[in-house]
Image (tube, rainbow, N blue to C red; front, side):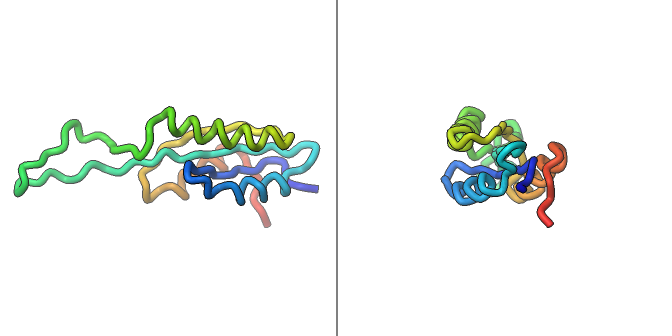
Amino acid sequence: MGFHRIVVPVDAAGRSSDALTTALRAADPFEGRLRLVHVRTWQPPPPPSREDGFFPAGGGELFTETPQQAADVIDDALRYVRDRGVVADGVVVQAPQPMVASAIVDAASTWGAEAAS
């Protein structure tokens, strides 16, 4: 008997394939469901520098990928999982680079994923 609700973080670099394979094995064959989570990270803008005359415009976040690139990561991972007969959905969440793990934990908690004991 496997888990019913498993959250799997996925990334663009393909480093999540082992996690996906493990989650597929751990999912209950009849009621198992995966939630794939990709974190679209951002860096805060650099502080203004009077020495070099650089003042960032707008003061917004500097994302490491576009919304479409983030969606493509989820879509590719969903195809992989669904081709193996497991029910899955995916979400993209946003977080500053140092808070990726917290964003994944929040997504798992909000969705009601089971915790391994």
